[in-house]
Length: 159
Image 1 (cartoon, rainbow, N blue to C red):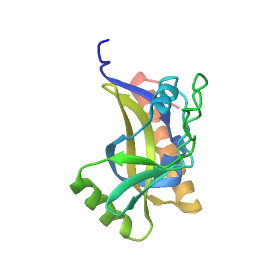
Image 2: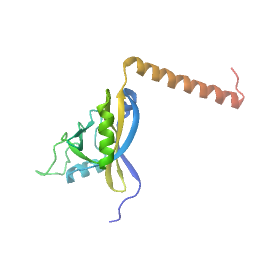
Image 3: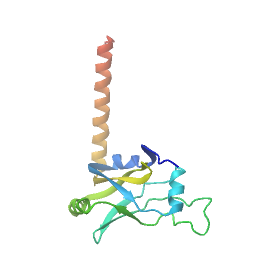
């Protein structure tokens, strides 16, 4: 069987971009068991409660829910187990230094297959306060309204 090419999205954490200020992103591989891969290929996973941490120089991801594979037997996996992340040593050191700073955490943004391998996109993020969220929404709406006004002006539709 030929290896698949490209990127196939399995799950996305849309809430993370709303709740956190994204500073930097990094792509990491995942250590999975067979039934987890089959469940992911069926397009089933949840990232909402997920977070990554660095323990003893190794990167781990917790809180990601990959449901049990229906066709699996006693070999099935635990849905919310911690999973090891595959990163280069320099990346782990850099991420650990960032997260040691106050308020920064590692949040998964997307889970996908890239050229047949399961990958997760991690973000170094800082939590937003409620007023920051309102400010971000207001800025987004004002930008959208400005783009609409420019579009109306270009089309010759004046208010």
